[in-house]
Image: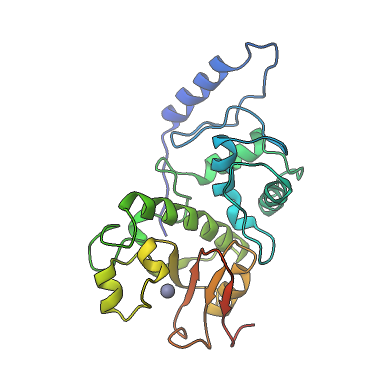
Length: 247
Ligand SMILES: [Zn+2]
């Protein structure tokens, strides 16, 4: 949980910049609703587009996945990405067309902080509980940050779908030594920053159930050994869902 502030002057400056860059080839895209110091999209994206703009969009809509089918962060705007954009638009009360344009970007800018984290989560919530930050894991500090950021956007979507009630991260990234100390599984997803243990106002089962359509292929919750006081969510390639008291 965190509150977010933002500088109106910074927004105005970036907005003016985006207006100044519009046009040139006889085609003037609608100006973004607001720009953002983290990342600004300069043009409307839809199916058939590809590249880094699409990849950045996919990170931010990945929590609006289909049931059991995480959105690939591959920079290719296919039907899966379009469907995720539609769910994002529906989720925030926007016009639903599966096309990422000014209104969609405006909503993302509203959610996005200057360090690219979503409004209700911060990197500090995911650092190793032994004080080692994002270091000492099974991958580089920079990979951990990337993994944590991607999970945060999924959690932002999950939180919104659960009625905007707080979710708390009891354990995010773990250094290998901290993971060993708390009895984590060898090579745990926590040591890569791809896992988060959650508690919160929604029940642990509500979290586990909704996570199935929020891009989490790893779900371990109530009824699974050692998981009656939190729900573990992670991003992995194959599906592992184990929450027998929930579903
Ligand atoms: Zn866990």
